[in-house]
Length: 134
Image 1 (tube, one colour):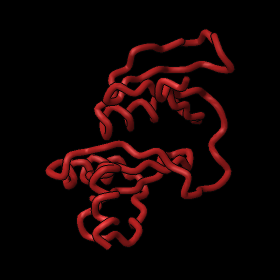
Image 2: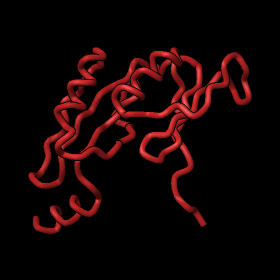
Image 3: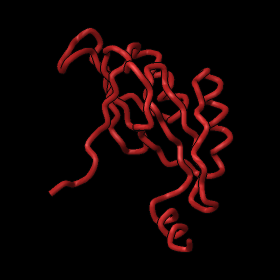
């Protein structure tokens, strides 16, 4: 039986730069740093983001961008402040897709290695309830 999400891993070209992004934008707490050691494929760091284990490993950036992304839940009243944090880091904010009123708002942004992140104010339940209304 699958019990839930274990962790998310990102391969990044600069561990320090990604750590700054995770801590600044997502309030990540660093829980592990391998330093020069390599217990896996390369040096790595682990973070806790809202109870989700996020691993970052040293490696080459993604060659291109896509809509594949990971989304983190934020409160509606945090939207503007989170957007300001993202912009302060000079990250590329991507215009969100058209939304139906009531399904939540999203901020999409790319990190330095072409990973796409989303900060979303809605939940699955609110989205499905909105879709059911037509």
